[in-house]
Length: 191
Image (cartoon, rainbow, N blue to C red; front, top):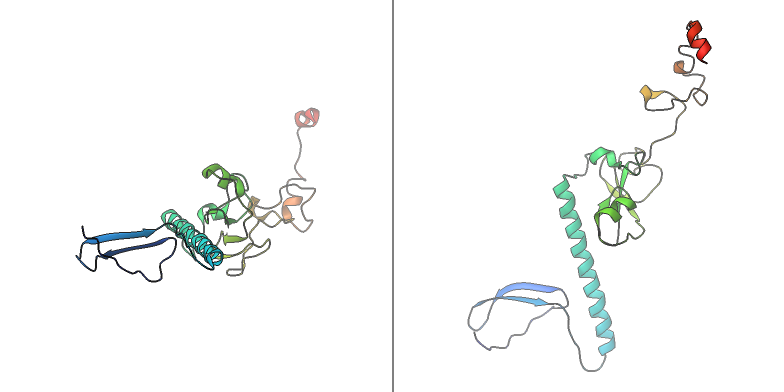
């Protein structure tokens, strides 16, 4: 181990590098977690260092979140698992990206269940149909044009839509289906 002095340029909080010693060529790891500055203008440089550290931690959080999504198999152009729906919100077809940890979850309740910190208000979302990330919106995805929530309709739509005959559209055949059937006396008596 030598005691050579070396100068490092463009280093700040969060700086990490693997290198070799310039004097003895031994391998070394350099990591700067924080810095203490002395002299004139220290307050300004402390503020700059704090902002730089926050930016680097935010970038690390985002990289961890992207790695987590890759592990789940999320790809742009393909649908999210269950089209983005979860057990809390079955009619929501999107995932929200939370700025507190940078990770995407189907809803705030799923975030609180799976993490150890409370959620912050999410302002970005992933479309459940195409996995495209964009600003959070109520109506439609800007990429594929599909809705981020299930639309309310007055038609049967194969059992996926309206099933209540009083709310169903009069143009739908299912509204009047089975009304002309004969009813047995036993069924009439039980009513």
